[in-house]
Length: 523
Ligand SMILES: *Cc1c(COP(=O)(O)O)cnc(C)c1O
Image 1 (spheres, rainbow, N blue to C red):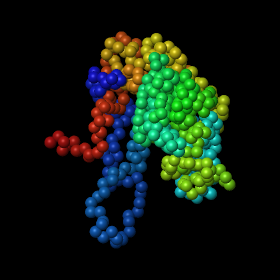
Image 2: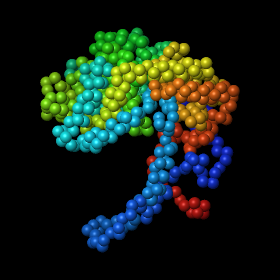
Image 3: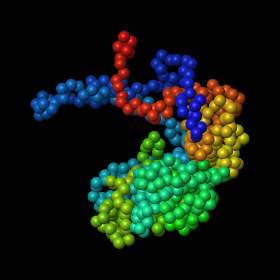
Image 4: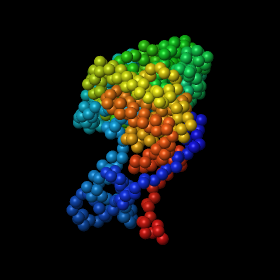
């Protein structure tokens, strides 16, 4: 199979067909579901309306001449359509979601109940502020806890996801440099192992990205950072724990070196789940860090779903918090523009149209308050323990790229152990689907060949981890025995088989065309 330099296959493997075809195309209780356009009929509706009274059209020549053609379904058909679609989704409520770097943890139902309270769920962003004082107080309370947990001076609440938070933090750094008359600093240092959003963010706002190499232990060493520092360096963007699941041991020395060179320290906080209650980024010398509320503080996410990425800022950047922000004076006020600016505030601009993701805020605060300080610390410890349990349970069969050292919240394997088996990381991941597991993160971080990054989170019980480990051990042994067929055509049991993901990304088909009726197609 053709591979690129990261060991990622560049073409799809040949897919074999299901051995036993059914009449309906369904398999057991797994039911196929076409698009509503394919099964709907324009004359059908789920509601029973009286025939319209006779009336004269006021549309004149603008009246539609033909049928609009929107497909209709009866109420039970509509119900089945959406329930069947929902069953095609694998989520954290279905089973262990081993995706690394994403913290797919359980979302407590209490959070959902709180988010649906009418005072939060039904508020409108254009409501007069006097009628949403409780919602504004909630944003302010959550902001307080985020600052408290991270040991930081300020927080910008409105960013809508981690990547948006990176943009916010880097724009604050840019504004701070310009305010000091140092807008000429154009270089941002980013380690090789960083998430793609880091260099993308820096480049988007005009910085030049310089890569910092990682050492053999998977971490960035201060000497390598110092070698790149100079009067042109604006900032470093470092992830901690890093994307290899390892704590950056020299982070304090790196922060000191960065500051001594007049630059700023941006920390990608996507992996904050591993250290909440254990270490405060502010104490480590961080100037700006986004917190993916949808990773660390539960709240559902995935499939491009909602996120929230507040950015905590150090004393050095606090003044540059963008609009809008909540000001506490005589009540709670959402400050949206220059109108009410104090001398100390130098917002770099306005980041979002409204206040941010209210539903995410409510869920995150509910998570914090129900866990308490001790519970959040315990969650971090359990997340790290679970990842190490998986590492220890698989390390004799699968290879560890950075030696046998303890990991943080995720365990990273490479594909050295698959050498000469004829099975690739992709094949292995697809075979996990047949066993009922969402695959781990594959081929990321890029610094590791054929990477498999597993993050079990604190949500999983020992029994659940034991079954997962036993399943991966069974697969690993099969691969080593040369049972290539179990892998190459996998998944055999999923509603959709092996897809050509590369072609789908390169040549996306974005237009739906009505399929020809079978009789016509046959002619
Ligand atoms: C998830 C993640 C991001 C981006 O966060 P989004 O909320 O998906 O925008 C950035 N860096 C790392 C390391 C991540 O895991």
